[in-house]
Length: 251
Image 1 (cartoon, rainbow, N blue to C red):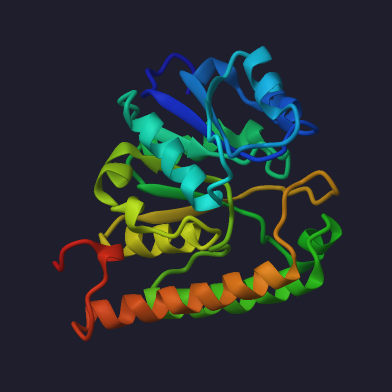
Image 2: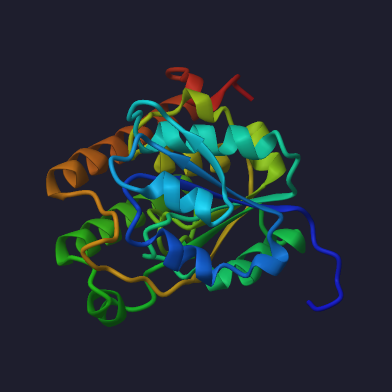
């Protein structure tokens, strides 16, 4: 709300070969509410780093490709060093609409939620017309349904890459125990639920096009399997059958 003091907001961008879309994503960010934008480059082979520096972003570079999850670990480590109130993670591939950051962070500022996801799934017609491959839509619906049942949630899109967290979430969750790969996102949300954080989502238009990053079919299958494995670990942990570092010390 205009005239209302906002907390410190830091944007983090896990980047890999985003030269074609980084500036478009940046130009849509409402810079008047953002204190800093941190881009972590995972050893891109294009001009991502040069463009990010030209835009005035804080740039951290991995000298070797470590993976999507490892990239986020660096993002959050760097963000926490700056004592933020809210951290927003958005991919610099222009797939998600960064103009919506003020609305997403508003739910956190008001204490309504601790985690907010940008949901791509409003209607089947809309998301398919935006270009989401049919197999990804179907797998998203199946996995999200299972996750909601197992985790006791009512989230419309568990697999969104557009997320905002309060600082307390990042300080509580042992995210360094997570995978360095794509399943990091699923593990993080499962941890957030385990630790009792309130999760919500808001509708976000999404764009699918050649330059937007997206995992291929084979990686999607592996991701789906690892998502189910994460749910199994959660069930085994909360029932005391097995203990996993993913959830830290038992409660």
